[in-house]
Image 1 (cartoon, helix red, strand yellow):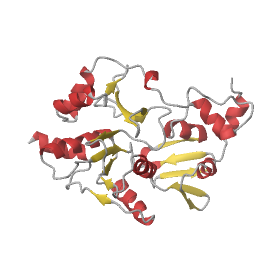
Image 2 (image 1 turned 180 degrees about the horizontal axis):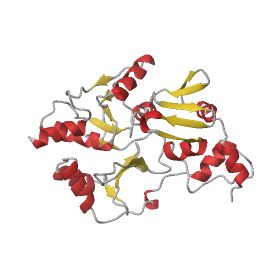
Image 3 (image 1 turned 90 degrees about the horizontal axis):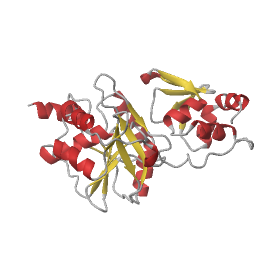
Image 4 (image 1 turned 45 degrees about the horizontal axis):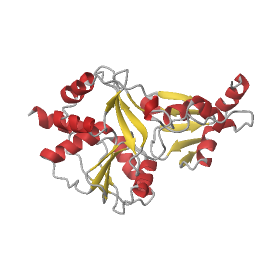
Length: 287
């Protein structure tokens, strides 16, 4: 059992220093640090403040909520104490650790009636093991790596009055939910969520003029430069990444951050005045 003293020490660890030592790029602003991909995410000493989400917490909270660490693993990494048992079986994601359900009624209803995803596409995702449902009726979008192994999952709630999104614990760093249109994709499209990815796929099937042949479509579950960098390398994509991000300030800031780092990219421009690809899909399907 981890002692209270060790937990306290982990919570008081300087979070910005820890992240920088792990290779994360933070931008210094006086005594604070700002996340390079999320301009409203700020780190100060052992705390973080995500202003756009009205969220804050300590060092342990950030590792657990946003980096996929288990509580024990977070304490170990933040303290590196010899008397702390390093977690083993919890470090790697295992889909079997999620209690799945065979009742897809809520998932189908949410995707088709709320998100206007075509039933044929939903069925295709389910049959291809790209869509599961857990015991809490959350949709589980499994994340496959380059070896077609499930290494994580993006979660999507199905309650219309409570918009839950998340990443399953211990999901592998640098990967996102993805759909391939060929065995060896040559291009990679990046989205802010699995729902937007699937919406874009459906739009391309019916009306939107975008060439997704020989491609892989990848959800970043947010705006994460590390997923772009790692995915291009893991899936051996030589072509410039194609951004399909939201039409809002965060999306614009993300593109500017890429330009500031001299990262070349292409873009699929979302038609005005729509905020994201699912909103655009809904407008089309309602006509």
